[in-house]
Image 1: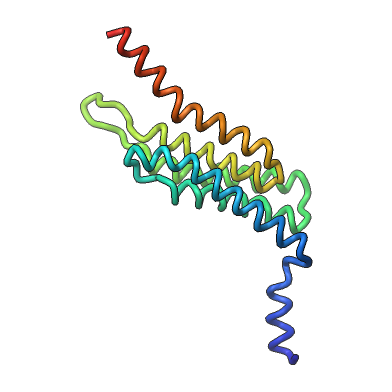
Image 2: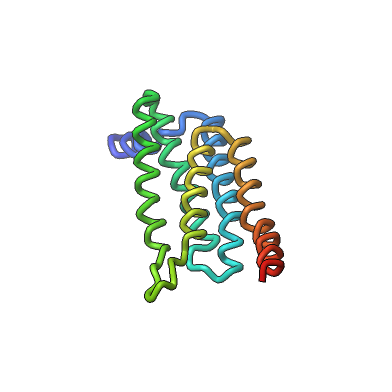
Length: 159
C-alpha cells in the first residue's frame, strides 16, 4: 500500500472495530435528537438559538467528553474536561442574554439556561449515561412546554 496509504489508514484508525463505531454513531445521534427536542421550543418561540444550535451544543458536548474517554483519560482529567466544557458553554450562553435599558430587565435567560442544560445532557450522553440524558430531556421538555401553561394561568388569576 505504501507509505502514504499506511499513513492515511493510521490517521483514520481511531474506531478500531464495528462495535466502537456503532457506539459513536448512537451517542452522537442521540445527542443530536435530544438537543433538537429542546431547541424545538426555542425555535417555535422565534429565538435565535433554536434547533440547530441546541443540536450542535449537545453533540459538541458529547464529543468533547467521548473523545477523551475513548483515549482512556483518568477521572481527574475527565473532571477538568467537563469543567472546560461548562466554562466554554458559559460564553455562548452569555451571548444570548441581553440587558435592557431603563429597568427593562434582561432577556434571553431561558434560552441561556436551555443551552447550558443542553450541554449537560450532551455530557451525560458522552459519558454513556443515555437513560439519564433522556430523563433530563423529558424533564426539561416539561419545564419548557408545560410550566408556561401553568404560569400563564397563575398570572391571569393574580391580575
